[in-house]
Image (cartoon, rainbow, N blue to C red):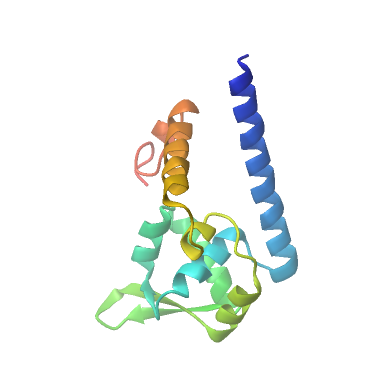
Length: 150
């Protein structure tokens, strides 16, 4: 095996482990997942957001996002209401309790890219590396909207 390939695998395993440990820490300290914290941080940027727009920005399966938002709603961290202009659509908004939790939670994981200033060239390299990872790992057919119509 090429040394570079082994080094890349080790780096990937370290990233996966760090994300898993971060999620476990969030669950233990705050009772939420990394995805739920990401949702709260996005909701914290606007007074209310259509659920469809949130789903599109996170590129996730509707059931996965819906379950996470429902748990946040039950915990009193967000509200879900019908859009007064379109009764079929739902609006999601962060509550004061959600804002307070978000203020105490660490800014880490992918949402940190939105919350902090970063060197633009590093961001460009990171995006290219993630695009390369999808290709090199043979995962193109598993991208949302490709394999199963999600």
